[in-house]
Image (cartoon, rainbow, N blue to C red; front, side, top):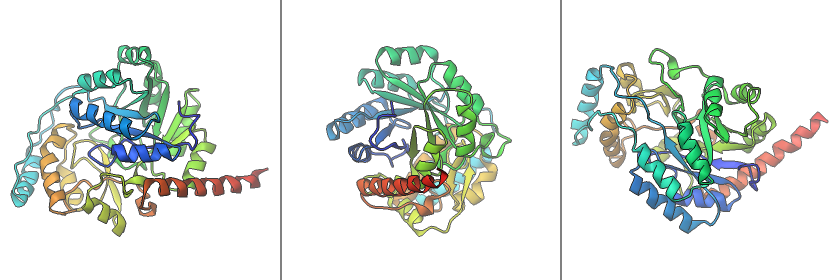
Length: 350
């Protein structure tokens, strides 16, 4: 599935805009692989993006879907709603409705089946064994994002073909199957190298490493630790082809902000640059996804239009300050050069 890539690099499915058809096409043209983000899109919009990507590249690419399962949260959103309502008034918009939904999972599954997407990955849980069987019958491979050995076991049990092993260093949402409200970061935190070793001891499935990887040396490191490929998101946030909002790009370029996990924007733990929303709203943010995400979405969009980085979800990995900018092909070329240099240094182990 990923073992035959000319360069073992995958551009991550960054939902909310950053991962575009143009970005996926550029990375695949450079020898890597790309996942379109299906999260937050309607089924029709996802179908359109798949079609657009297929127009831009003849190479295979994948699609990522959120497994939102479960039901409405029973957490008290009152205080959090009031904090965001004040920001909505300041920006002249109405807050969104804090409702539960399943991100149109069933409809989007039908889209990837109809479009015969060669690789479908899942985040926030596993698809059912029946859904995996349908995808396999359609000649699609299945990958599941895991953040712990226990989650890896569950993904193996439903028939996954590969695991995307996500370390706590990753930007944006942790792929946790379940968010533990009282736990920092929503649950156990494993670094990507530690998790690779633990998961590879439990399964022979191909492993894709992700989490804070922005340098070619990082790619070499995870390959040496047993991964078949490295998935990078933050490294491409400032790529020319990325759909990252200007104020978000500028905050990344400016640097200087630490990162932290917060539920403030979505109700799920996500790593963001620390801004006023992270500092002031995290304490009242309940474990309530996607209710909080639906509440804050129009407010965050308005903040983006107003170029107000203090209320935006500035998602990024821990090493964001080391990521570059420019055409995606140039970023891939730099990563290749750095990876080869790192591989050369390994010759000292002879």
